[in-house]
Picture 1 (cartoon, helix red, strand yellow):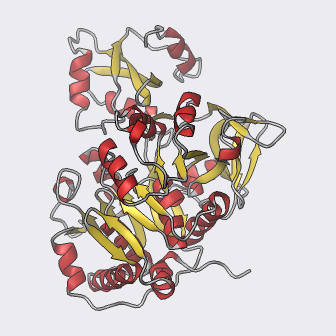
Picture 2: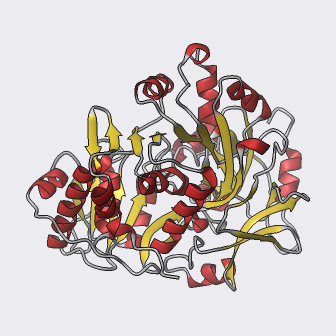
Length: 492
């Protein structure tokens, strides 16, 4: 079987087949597929003139914006590698990501989460920064159209950072084939149409927004309505004015919309599907939306699978409530002896960027070890019941307790620390930290939370801190997290 072409030719193929269709909507800006391809080709030529070639990295730091899509396709169209950076990270965390991937160019947006927050120095190794609305647009306007490269399907296309239990963020190596096969899974299992209008306010620097909506919708020739951030009133306005057919978000977003006083009378008649990930949708929320018409499509996945693994279709949303669904069409899922979910398929990444030991530990003969424990019923529906890994999810964001613990113990008065996720009505889970202070220390929990500001992203910062004399550990010295969870009071 001939493998699918690389991502870099997608805009050219869409411009050939449906040049007049609207590809992107961003505020008052409407971009057709012909216009998108023209800008992608000009950006590719400009990047090539700056020395970007096959294998080089080009990063993007900013909100959902046409520049994200343009940079993705222009970069991959040169045979280079796209690196989306999380705007919610602290400057030190962004500096780590830049140091780890060594991009030649960073496309950044003005404002606190863009060019002004880049931790760049004056060395020859520092990447060149292109600012959207300034040097970025000047480069496009002054460049000719480049021919786009049809990359080898197994070539690296995107480096996307994911949380890990070691406390050191790592980037998953997403190939052209990984992203294409995942998009095909979505097109097949969700039955996307060519006239889809997808509202996307969940950040594109996450695998879910990129892989489950952005790329599949563009593959089908639909329209992406890009929003830089989630806002309830703005969402309801756009659903009506743009006749949105599909939305992606986490349960927190959909619950917030349902609580709006405008929800009861909002025009949702165009919406077919609400695609939801990050955590199970509560049954009460299913009922609220079922009464208004739109159907929930819930799923389970991870960055390493580009990201779709399981999908719970609307027909079984009620009868199989609480499950994560069945495997996607081109996905194979198995359970190990201890019930850990193992994933295999053409959408599963080959490993992590510059992490050979962690890659070897996570992949076994083509199977990726998810770190999540599940059960499966007689109908093939999987229920996630526990985590082998210690991650928790806050507002749809994966948080690594080991990373937070490492930052906490960097405080001069903290000699030991432990963090777990605890239930939260708004965010699903938030962090609770226990710390052991140096003898004679007068540091308070409030002092520690203030010290963390700027050192950790807000979603990683524990909501509460508790000072204790010692932390429970097993005979090998490992933190006894179950004992810590049992020590929590009912109110916590």
